[in-house]
Length: 79
Image (cartoon, rainbow, N blue to C red; front, side, top):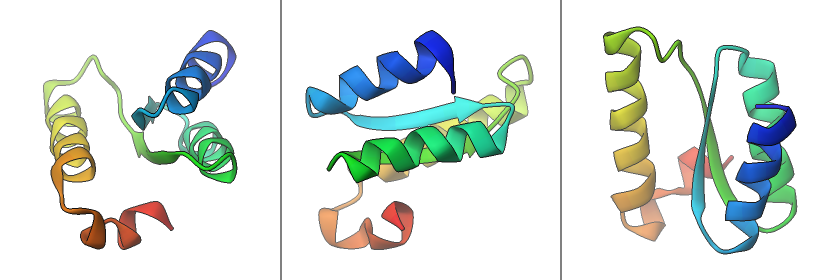
């Protein structure tokens, strides 16, 4: 959630995308998600090692809930 990944996430958010920030480093992922939110975007941070199938499933589930839940249910995800 740094370097080119962070910059890509910020650009996607500026274009209106809901961004799921995934990184092995939770603090970096949280920081990137906070930057997006501070700029008026929507983001969540998920710690995951994408080389592990179980962790990818967690990312998929978190992403689905974040993107497809009705807006009134997003409050707990956007804090």
